[in-house]
Image (cartoon, rainbow, N blue to C red; front, side, top):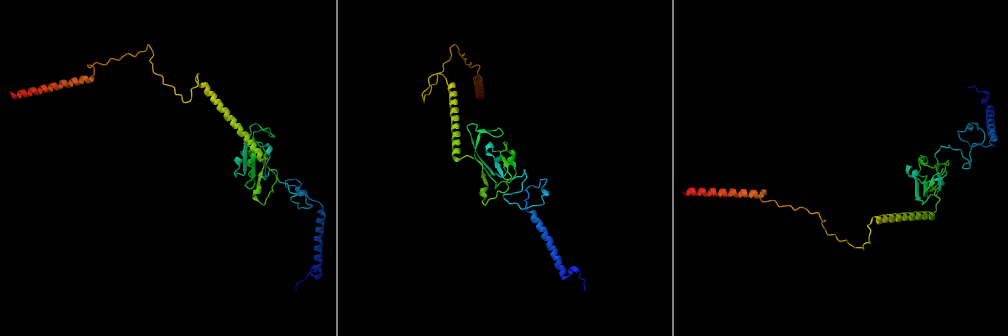
Length: 270
């Protein structure tokens, strides 16, 4: 028969259970008293992060949130007042999530915070965060540093189309007006260019009355200048002509052959 200790008895088990219950309740009541205060939501990089061993741990999100690192890559934001619409961010984006429509101004429209001149209107500046891969290249190439990544990491939506954020502050009427001003300026430049070309042609034209349309000037007859006479070339004599000399030689040869034939016939008759 196995030996049973004092705590193995019926009353001993009840005593051990009550002791464990009191120890647990004591610990719970102690934490309950410490829960009167809230922990300050600080990041893990804070030197006092591990010293906060008392207080309520649960954060009341979204009213409270743990700080995120400053170098984190989260939601993009464009400070449109400092944007010079250089289009570098749209060109370097590997997923084409930035869409820009520039409208050139007829003159300087202002300065950015770093002193850069603004000469282009941002008719459209949209960033589709649904396509963004959070590479940060667009913020690196921005010359005025107006494009940055904020600390907002929770921007979830029910519709993916709501991830397209527009930063342009121009109305459709303002866009049409600026496009019209640019078109008028280009027409004026083309007109001035045509007038300058016509004026240049007029300076090259000869003096005298302007000929009528369809007028064809008559060709001037050639008149040799007085005192300049070309020497007459005398024809070569027939004796010096090689063709005439060859004809004469052939005629003499034929005469000799005919005379020889006649002599041969006469000798045969005798």
